[in-house]
Length: 250
Image (cartoon, rainbow, N blue to C red; front, side, top):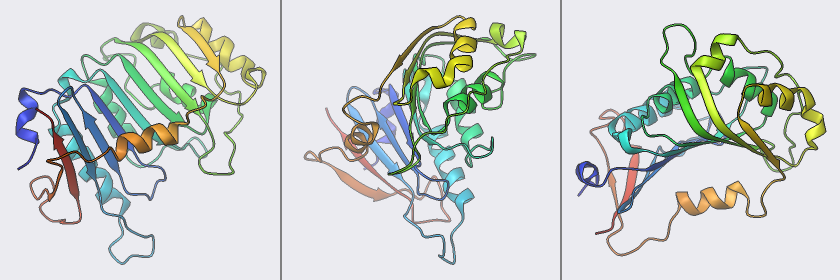
């Protein structure tokens, strides 16, 4: 039996969108006080005949739309790899949905490029800001700046230095927490610009418990009695490769 009908009485408070590479499968972890669900697209290879990154993206977006995120307070996006100022497939669409979560208090983003992420975020490339857009108040933005894989370091580009004055009115962030092992002096201009925008800024080294370990625990929680796996043909009737795992705790 699907857990989705119970969301009306067990609203979700935390959602994680996990796609480590642009061609990886997508995992969505949704949690509330009584429910933990894990949605995932099928694992595919780049050389598979039916491989299509957009198919995974649009399927995942349809799941986000069905999850009724009106009560979501925390959203995590892992991983936002930025290459040549280009965003991963589906990133704008995901952030557009995050932008419309009325009770969101914490946004967590893992990325390889701190300076470029802030430029794109405050510049309105990830979410619509400025003329015609409603004011967005975000209490906490938490950024984990790291390499896009084992053996890779985060990009060091001190490129966040100019923000349209309209953005300061359209986007209000109370606190920005940055976790990065790079010396903050390498982002001097970026930090100056960020502080000038008004939020309190905290810059710390990467935590001992890595984001990978934390995410892995969330994506693959211990399976208590009643853990079920089923195919969900409603969200994507043309593709049986998608499935979700749900745990309903009463």
